[in-house]
Image (cartoon, rainbow, N blue to C red; front, side, top):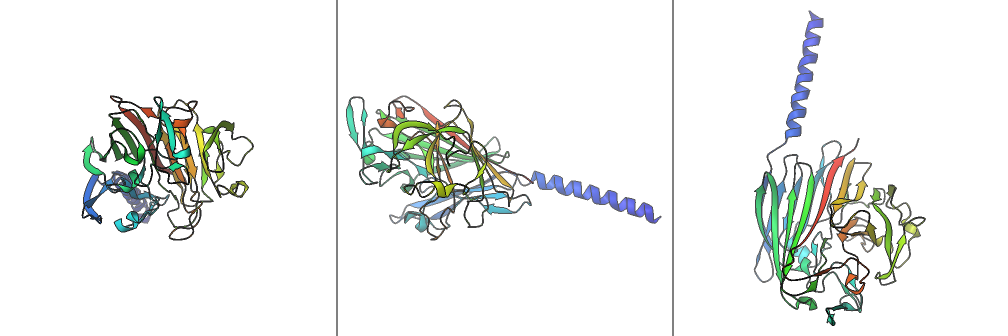
Length: 370
């Protein structure tokens, strides 16, 4: 009799465990929540959109800078942590908090803050010494976008639009840009970029998210990185490409096989104080393909990055000083065209023209390993 009871108890326990696992895997229904994130000094209201997929992942996106402020991802035990460095206050972002914002019109650097276009020289705002970086002083990370949220075939998404005026920061052409964040049940956060211009111009967008897969406020030096790249664009002391494309073999830049981010970081030059390098990605630009894979062994979190862009800038928060995050407290994988491409005809072109529908896509895919 007691043996039957034990067997029955074992069967009930197994069934209960199966049902619990099934329910846990189902999770909740995908949803979107829209709230106010605060008001800008001029009184404009800034909305926050919370995207939730059916497996427990959440992403917060705000209209200021089209910024990803929070990304909750489970570890191997199902514990959720924020893996994007962010803040809860709009005021913090307005004051210049380093954020997961959209960078444009031109992400990264342009030498001399000028470039030739159709036989004339275009002059830009100088905001990095004599050079131009990340779209100038009033760049896409510092303006108010307008978002529209929707469930598209069960996938929560928000499309944010900004209209950049002709001459803004020196760039020609009125440019209408839409960036769409979507969060699928495959645990993929996708960023789709679209743009149209009424005059020939140059254009290079990215998201400047600082990731830390541990989600604990420490540094990222023990997290393992693999990059799908054999070469990089050699840069001068101003971190602007010289035009040379060199092999990563035999250098601290070689992440063709997984290495700890901090394994060889001390071998890098004083000019970068860490990684701040543009990698040439393998495969055909314009097609969605793997760019990088990062693993945090302690939490089990894994993040894969896929993109249609020709390059990715690896940056390891070299300038952080503990306020509020420690040095190397995050890593950036800025999928983009190469720096200074408008002055380098041998690089993939960043010129777009009227009636051209410019598109780009980057995906961050999350999983866990035991």
